[in-house]
Image (cartoon, rainbow, N blue to C red; front, top):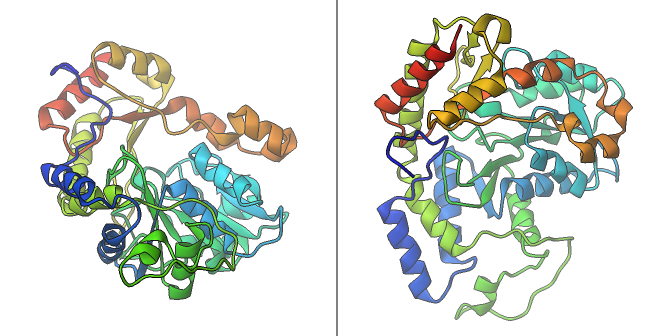
Length: 383
């Protein structure tokens, strides 16, 4: 990649994390083991959650959290339509039925009014998303939907570092589901975790992530272990490896500094882009902390002078990477067929905002001059 490009994302694996990976590779034990258990403890402490369970992905985490709700097959689960398709696939894989919730026109998350409207025919549970890092209150949304707070699953793939009511996302819920994908705030490459306040539930997820077995291979093959195990619950294959965990442990040491840098980049964008007509900046929570996983602007075609797709193309030609988060779920053929056109119903706000959304580069390696270049390019494209 040439030096004059500004990539949408650049994954940084620290030298310490690289050395940790080599150490695990040399150890002879690379699957789930001591490193994974240590990572769970350290990640849980960072999030201030009583328990953390490391898993293969945030998608697997959401599915596992939903499966342990004990809902009947096909039970309705509320989910944003403006979300990553994998989060909705998790509902389907858990044997439940997604019920799509329209986007909030200001925050791009969901509102209490939107949730209440989607739940008018009933809801058994809900998956909430901290879109781009903007925190949402699961208890408030649960009340609006008429469901118990314990039936809310947090899709916190974007939410690491955000707060709700002054408390870290994932620290106080039944299930906070995190992602360590290459683009995320804590990049490992792949992986995820579930945090919870329920110790028994955490142990159940630890069994579930390895086929429901009572003893994982580390416990079975360790000097003090035994080959004997039993299976009492349904399980799946969703464990994190020690190789990933070792990388994650070292990356976690940088996370606070990375979060500060993300916030500084967002503030620099705000200062320079605020005066451009037709360019709407992302909202900030009134009292809580934004995680700044994404910096999503909205291009209002008439006032800006051109449309979102053209802006993205022109920035790309100038060596500046962008993305769009997300294609609404009800625009995707699989989900349209699965849910039926009528089920995709009244999702007008998502339809309206989707053509406007543009995610600008935001990662800790972005320099001030990179940010300035993005801002100057956007200003030049405006009418």
